[in-house]
Length: 127
Image 1: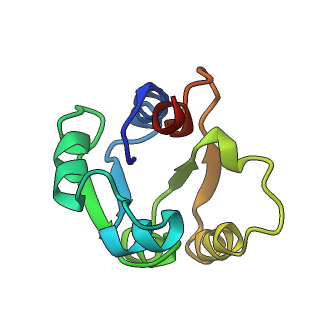
Image 2: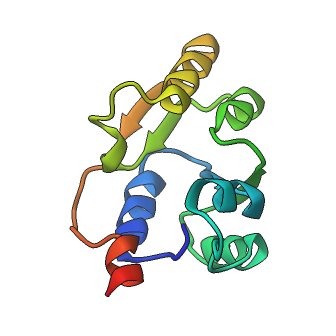
């Protein structure tokens, strides 16, 4: 969610219809920087959290200090855990596999939001 774009909005709208309470595991600034490099995040955790909480679909934001959401899954024990469509066909992703295992342990279901738009953050950063 850095920067937030219309594809994220479509994802959140879909997620909002899947459960009673939506908790977003949002990467801490140090996690974003480690994954994306110097100059990232563009917006601080507080700014990104404030933006997410402005959407009626989002009820809570969890500061995720890890490169995956295993801790959040173990803490919140979601019935449904939703990843974006870009994760659906990823293979060999150790973070995704760790999340799958944590979900299995707590009886949660992994689903992927449907792609509805081709816009993503790289288009904004490179264009």
